[in-house]
Image (cartoon, rainbow, N blue to C red; front, side, top):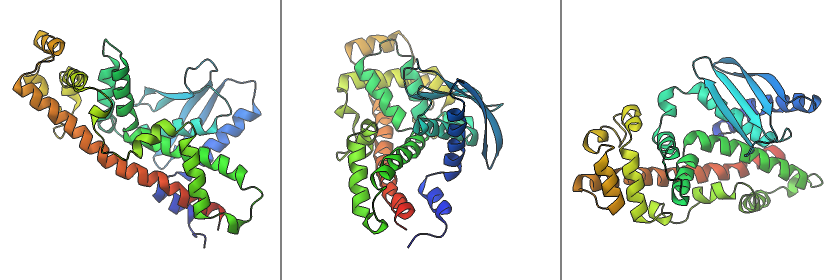
Length: 300
C-alpha cells in the first residue's frame, strides 16, 4: 500500500521534493529559452528566499559547479556544462541549500579543510589526488548532493524502463537489480564504490605509508587548519608542537619523524579512518533507501 504522506516520507529518507520541484521549474525555463546562457532564479526554503545566477558554459571541464560569492549576502552562481542536465543542476542546488542552512563552522569541517590544504600542496601527485578525492566524497555536504542527484538520475532511467509495465510487476527485487546495475555501470560507480567498501577503510589501501606520513605531517602543520579547527578536532593545537618549518621539510625528505610527530600523525589518520568507516555504514544504507522510495512512488 502506498504511503499517504509521500512527501514527508521522502524528506525523512533524505530526498527533498521541494528542491526537486524548484529545479524542475528552473529546467523548464532553461528549455523555454534555448538561446539564453544566463538566468536569474529564486530559490526558497524554510529560511527564506534567495536569488542566484545560473550560467551555461559548454567549455566547463566538469559537469557543473556552484560558486559561493558571498555567504553573508547569500550570493551564489551555479554553472552547468549541459543545459539539459537536470541531475547536475539538482546536485548543485542541493549544495547551495546546504550552504544556506549551515554556518561557516559546519563548512570548515575536517574534510573540507584537509582538502583545501592538499589543494595547496606544491606537488600534485596521483597519491595526493586520491586523498583529495577521499576527503571530497566523505564530506557530508557532498554526500547529500550525490545522493539527491543519484536518486534523480536513476529515477529518469527507471521510468523509461517501466513505461510499459504493470504496477504489480514493479517489485523490490526488480528495482534493487536495476539500481545495482545503474550504480555499477554508470557515472556514480567511482563514488559509491567507496561507500560500499567491503573491506575496512584504511588509508594505506590507497597510498604507501611513506607517502601518508608526509601528507599527514603536511596537513597537521598547516596554520590554517590550526586556526579554524575546533577543540573537538584532532588538529587543534598541533601547530604549537609540529611547526611548518625546516625541520618538517627535512624529516619528510628522509621519512624520519620524532616520537611526538609519529603520535600526532597516527592520531589524525585514526580519526579519519574511524569516521569514514562510520560514514560508510550510514551512506550505504541511505543509498539503498532509493529502492524503497522508487517502489513506493511507482508501485503504489
